[in-house]
Image (cartoon, rainbow, N blue to C red; front, side, top):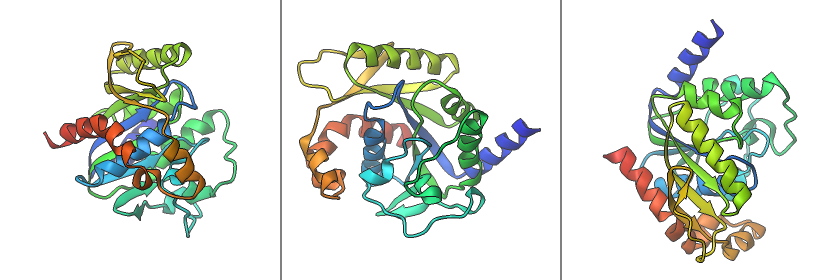
Amino acid sequence: MMLDFRKYAISSAFRRVKKVVAVCSGKGGVGKSFIATGLAWYLKDSLRTGLLDLDIYGFSTHRFLCYVPNLRYESIEEAVPVQIDGLVYFSPVLLIGDRPFPVRGSYREKTVLDILSFVEWPELDVLIIDMPPGTGDEVILPCRYLAEKISTIVVTLPDPISLDVASRLVMLLKEIGVQTLGAVLNMCDSSVNIEKVGDVIVVAKVPHIHCVVSSLAQGRNPYVACPEVREYLKPIVEYVRRLVTD
């Protein structure tokens, strides 16, 4: 019965969302949230776009958006997305602020599924999800429940260890029947000659951009303050836009 309830609740919460693109990484610290937030920020210029921060321990998309919530919901059952400059947005920051979120064991999966079940989305062309890192149930369950709508993008650093972990994630996504649109190499200098992660094509290479660090330190939105970010993310933004509009 629980599985049936979850399937119905998640299907209902996402019924007005046309496509879901989950931004994933095999491990933390590779810039997944930066890529996910930037993808959503630039897509909103031409599509009805939402951004869901599902990284329950490391939620940080609000920092990139320079968003400080002026309200906090008392429970997930009453929570609704907010609007930030035309982007429809939800994050655990709307529930607990910037406090730690010490969720353990089976409650990790329950928390992720609660967010998917109770946060109801408006009419959207695409919803970008900043996924939890890794290959656990927090990643597998959303992919299974959203199987009819979801595709993924894998973010990794270009070093051998990150690539190895990302390749295993690509294999897992393939095994559970989820399409991976492509990979993004983050913190990647121009000398790196990597064209695939596992059997997935690299569609964007993003270098270290000093402007991003300085703009965040000054409390400024890096996607506005740093025009070069748009250029580096343009290939994956256009790829997703075509997926939705074709």
